[in-house]
Image 1 (cartoon, helix red, strand yellow):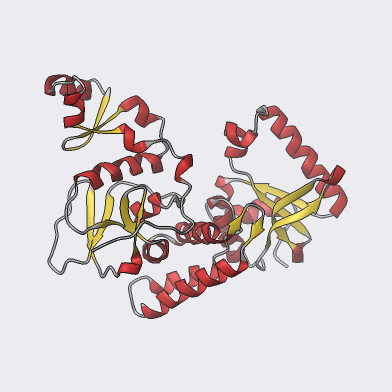
Image 2: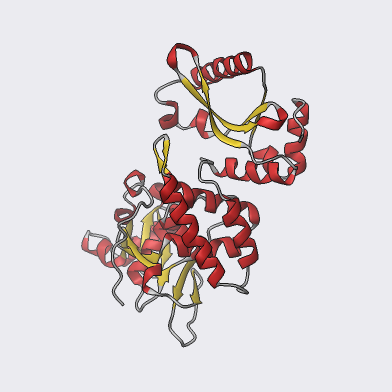
Length: 335
């Protein structure tokens, strides 16, 4: 089956480390002066990680990768070693698409084939048998995987609700986000296509949850924590919040607030750690300067709008009750 490279908006692979150069075969190592004895010694001393039979990665390089990137490296090893028509799917396709996984461990590589016969899995590979029409197949960075729509369809049926909402929001954002602009037509087309896919799968396992998630999705949520915050706010009885609310700032600045809780006369923000710890997000500022800038921003928003303002983090969105307690501390309750 011929699979064409994907030409639509997809994961920003340019921002990833060059994982394909980190995953090395035994033959490549031998060609570069290693021996089977030195490879075995390096694995014992934990200088090399044995990914699967015949495939290795430098341990120090692997330790610098995020869990998603480590899984992506495993995907590369499996893809280079696999034969037949199976393609990366489910969580592994989600990693290739650079979708976020909220509190989901990435252990085995998932692959799907439409072969009618039974196929066996392996310790590091879980294989599925399901129809794979041509429109559900793409090539990203040289690896065959399920399309974005098929990947979201598969994941929203199998993941816990919180993780599914984070996936659906992120996929919609891939289709609609244009810096600070929002492509309404692209999002409408994406939603219609996903709804059509779900309608055609009536009765399939998990499709009821997937339909609800598809209806609830909003790609303007920019982080998994914002997506899960939306879900917990809904469970607490808050009307759907405004997202990325613009607030005019001083000297022509424009501030954007994560959540506008209009009926409660309040603003809310999910405070991810990356804002303070990620050097790229700090744009050269120290952590102290980021905190001062955030305080000035929050003071301005409070003072000019007269609204209450609450921040919360990952701990407060683990349950609806935890978020409710945090909001109540700021006298913010559902209308």
